[in-house]
Amino acid sequence: MPTETKVSAFKPPQPQVPGVPSNEGDRQKALRAPQAWSPSPALWTGLAAAVLVLITVVVLWRGFRAAARQPAPRSVSNDAPALPLSAPVVEMPVGPGKIATRSELAGPWSSRRFLFRDAQSGERTPALAVRLPGGELWGILLRAPYGTCDLQYLTDLAELRSKYGISAKHPMVVNPCTETVYDLAQYGNSPNGLVRGEIVEGSDVRPPIAIEVVERGDQVIAVRSE
Image 1 (cartoon, one colour):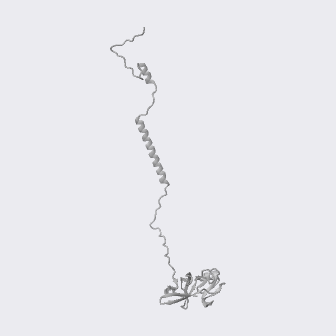
Image 2: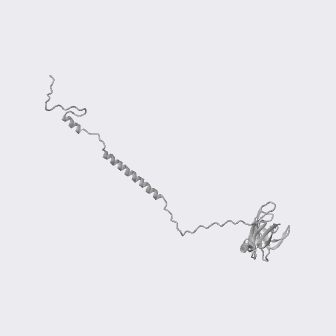
Image 3: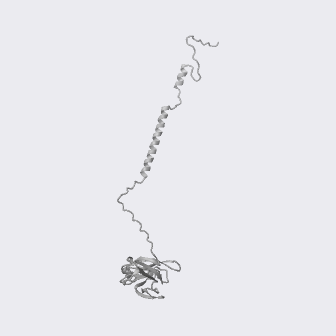
């Protein structure tokens, strides 16, 4: 015969819950069984704070390294010397016309550079006016006759002696291309007659091309060339 379970009126049977052992022995076994670990909210909060601190440290460290690589600012002294100002560009006078004043050509062998415009071509050629010891003014083109080399008015007597072999007592005009030396104190032959600038050394064929220079009041005027 099937065994009958007696139910006490004072101890009603416990309801059966799915997944929960119905007797004490089974409940004890369930408690001793290993449980799956689940982090608590407090642990999650602590991990987030630790990550935030780590990120902050990394950012600060990178900023410190970048600042260390920057060059130190250079101190600027108020006593630093000022840079020299560029000299203003002075345009040379152009003849025919006024090229200087009497005071600019006052002393013997004083000179004044200018440009002389050719009446036919309009070309401007470097030129020079010189006050001679007797007071006369003389003008020349600073372009070698029948050539393209620019002439020079050389006032350094030591250079005349060392470079051109001339023991001169006053400035001379030289052609650096042919090493010809002209003396404005002497006359030489030209196709238009005698002109100043006798050749005292070198192979050029005639004195520099002359320019007529006159004084009108305080002005020095270049009139015309040969």
